[in-house]
Image 1: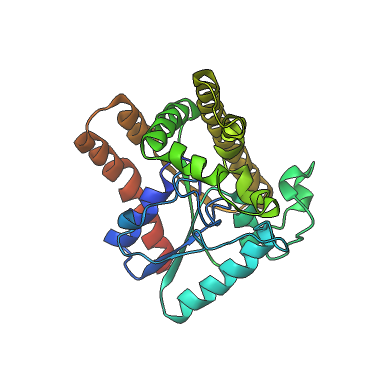
Image 2: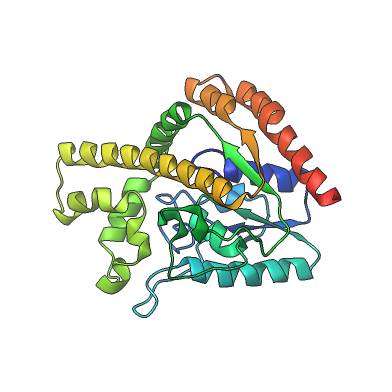
Length: 281
């Protein structure tokens, strides 16, 4: 768990591919649960998954009767995936930044009509867990993360995000489906005005890109606040792993080798120890 861009996906792939091969990943990013907009929602490309099976990643197709993938949906679907993975004597890794989904899955008592993160006090949270689990909280200093996120948006645009959004806005999907939860994906509302006018200006484009960068940074800040609230209100033991140095080196262009060395020493090695200790208990 951790804010967007902190390195959760890379860490999970490294852990499973190198140290815990009998494992599978359950996606807990609510926007990535929707099918489509793979670049805009920053889904891990198939080639980067290293043959690791992923569950609930791009599986949900909204409809008129079911336009949103809710925390209750995730609780049900992820529980079924966990049971299936365990039945094959494999280890489930739940990976993603949507803390409302993580809480919905793990809390013993869950009210789908209540948003505990919006509650004024901690009494709304359930401290009891449904599963015995190990929490890896991937943490990073916000100024460093913000610089990395701004760079990542530029990389996503270079990778085809603009063309993907253009295809999305020109599709023939029913309006009720277009108004689904996927419409909340950062990039969609920011570019909507540009594409709705068909011939947006260069200024419109720059404003949209600027808004995407700002909103992505605000999303990360909010996710960090939710993680801290979850920790404080539930008492769950979140094991912190720092990616600040690795992301700073990546932003500064210190070279792939230097970034890899920092990542190995400061992120991967401590994470391996935490997970091994948990599995031995």
